[in-house]
Length: 245
Ligand SMILES: Nc1ncnc2c1ncn2[C@@H]1O[C@H](COP(=O)(O)OP(=O)(O)OP(=O)(O)O)[C@@H](O)[C@H]1O
Image 1 (tube, rainbow, N blue to C red):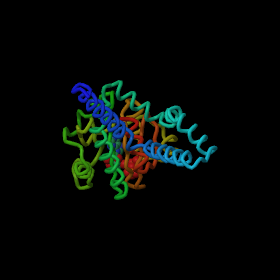
Image 2: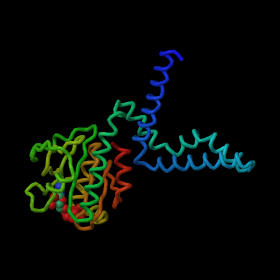
Image 3: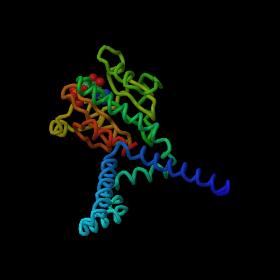
Image 4: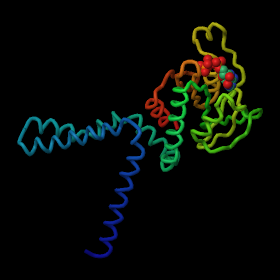
């Protein structure tokens, strides 16, 4: 073996390891991991069936394993779409950094809901929310559970209104979403109060995501494009945020 083929083998192994690690990071917080585990089980059983000469079972399992790429493309569709759009935007490699924000947010609001601590968190995406922050309190603080809990703690002067989050920063607190014209009938039918309506309003006029923790109901809702996904649990919320960020 020449030194060149030795070095290229090492580089080859390192690159494959990196690709596998990268895929693991991208998929670990979705249901994809259970699909991968399912595939590994089917693959192992097919080897055992082969070994034991269980012809029909081995044939069926070989067929499933052989067509896994097509199956995976169908089953992984939301994840693949997300991964491709991130890579397209050059954000794929930043996913790990983003995953911390997603987890921190999902954990924080779930805990807030359990403690009936009301909150409104506006997550900026492509459309800037600067116009909302003119009369707000500028912060530019690192996003953390402690910081969000402190802000929305009832005794804090900043607790009234929303916070605006950009990446892993909390840009401002006491952000007031301008009153929107939602007719009285609709308000009655929707049965939501002003915090939820503010979340619906801001997301109908921007591409922001609003996380709304209901003080009264102890629920977490996510507003997007003016529509509310009501009462999300931790897993669903995290999955939704991963898809959107
Ligand atoms: N336009 C707004 N912009 C930002 N925050 C708002 C706005 N309107 C209300 N809020 C916040 O919502 C709080 C009042 O929530 P309200 O009880 O009316 O709504 P809700 O949707 O029923 O929420 P909850 O279930 O938490 O009671 C206010 O104290 C304020 O912090």
